[in-house]
Image (cartoon, rainbow, N blue to C red; front, side, top):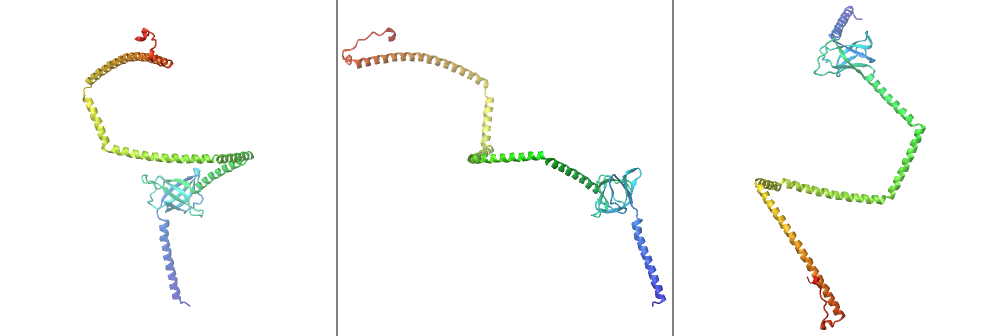
Length: 326
């Protein structure tokens, strides 16, 4: 059995160890519970805070900066829930930051996530209200309501679509479509050769168009080379020189001379016209005499054919009228 002195030493050791453990717990607890915190408030209006608990974490962009200190109703407005949060001193919370309610995994517990805040905005004073953000539950609920409304519309449309009269119209439409497709197939079969010829013609036209496009490309290349060469510049320079020379020339004197030339030309044309008219009259008279001579020759040849002895004994000559002797 242990002696009395051993029991006393064991008791003293237990007392000292317990005291040291209490002191250690006090030091750790004092840092946790007695450290100064910056207090802020968040007012959620008509938003469920289910899942938030006192002591739930408060994070800023994923960094743990504090905890929820209390959750209470606003005594002046029962639709508002005021959440008091205690964050580390010196946490830079901007005036345009928002406090959203986020889920912690799949446990159903929630936390507050502070997001937003620009560098240009001023810091929010301690003890002020942080702007309330949304709740993931509310967002999911709202989206679920929208989806449910759309599903309801789809179901109503399906019900309306499957009415007997609508189904009958659909069946008629399907039959008409089938008949139209049969007619199209028959028409294609009847005109298959024409279609083939048309396709061949189209291929030929496309080949010709390709050739024409190549020719146009070659022509454009030549034109581009011509414009880039010195020939065009030389032509333009010559045109410029001609225009300058024309500008420097005595245009007034040239115009007067041109008028004289035109007048002389007109006189010459008038004279030629008169000569041609006189010559035409003489030509007509000559034709008249030639016609008379041909008539006499015809008459003589007729007489010789009728009586060749005329060449020996001669023929009675009728007196020629005076008008034919002219």
